[in-house]
Image (tube, rainbow, N blue to C red; front, side, top):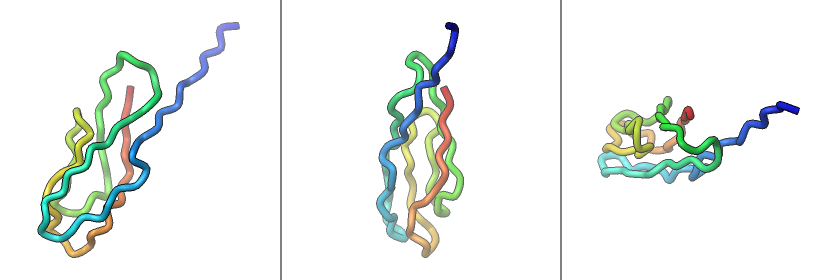
Length: 79
């Protein structure tokens, strides 16, 4: 009938461990599902100061430079 059914994306892990002020932090973010064969680009907002995400690999890394150690962010990926 020509109906296109989107394949949902699942970002894992769903939660990230806390970061410790002044201690190096590295976590791999992955996606499951979605269409295969597409290059995914990652962005994150709300990461603690000192942490960043690699747009091509989904690795969050760095050394937190603020006292807030809860790693909470919005992650975006696109096919």
